[in-house]
Image (cartoon, rainbow, N blue to C red; front, top):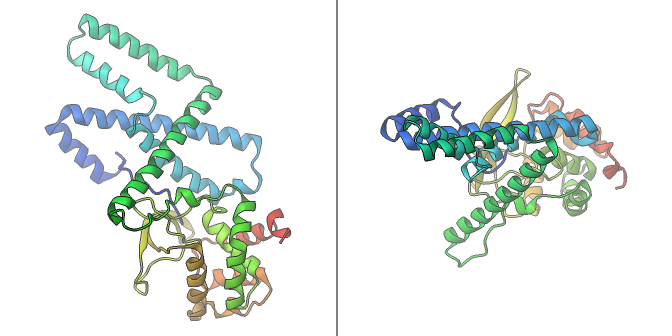
Length: 328
């Protein structure tokens, strides 16, 4: 139910493809650059996918769930497009130069440049996995930093410098399950006391919705929404919202859709609204009668239609059985 903040166009999208065709008629050079960047984004995404496959072969444990993989695929796709547009690894520039050289008849100096580009393409194709991993890691780190800086600059510009800038979604990512549990456990206890349920069940649900706090829902400008329960912004919600791509199950089939989620100013507000959301809905009255039975709470939430994932309650149970919850 989550995605990566930045929104990038992709040539497989019909509207984007139509716009690209129109641009090709008016500005061939500009369209050529866009196509080359899209090709490079596909190439970078393949590198990231190969890296993920290598990690899976080594072993992953609790973090190798289907839901985590879905988050990773969306993040890798967005990151690949962003990397290609921000300079990438030089592949798109080489492709553009090669094409332009061919169109210009292959002058001596251009031909030399083309040979250099061909050598570059061959070199990229022959890089071993270690070099590819180092390249992707450096590029992704630079990309994430640039996104965070851009989001902070946009927030400062909107506020006019008179108010404190809202934190970016990247700045509230938890580095480990330990950090996630330690920071949010007090909020879970408070919400659970209000609802009369087991606080472990509350925190486990938040862990599932956010991938242990590693995949926060972000607003369009990259600012944090602090929404850790995936509560959508329907007609009853009058506050701020974050519109992102999400994975929903329709008749048992997973589909990607766009959805608006509620946005808060802090984690505390998110937990408070979660408690109010459940207690004010007739659909979740059975869940609130589960008392200290965390598994029954999760099952009742699923039966009440909290999420479309048919394995929602099972995934919460798996988190409840993890070592980080056993310590609570």
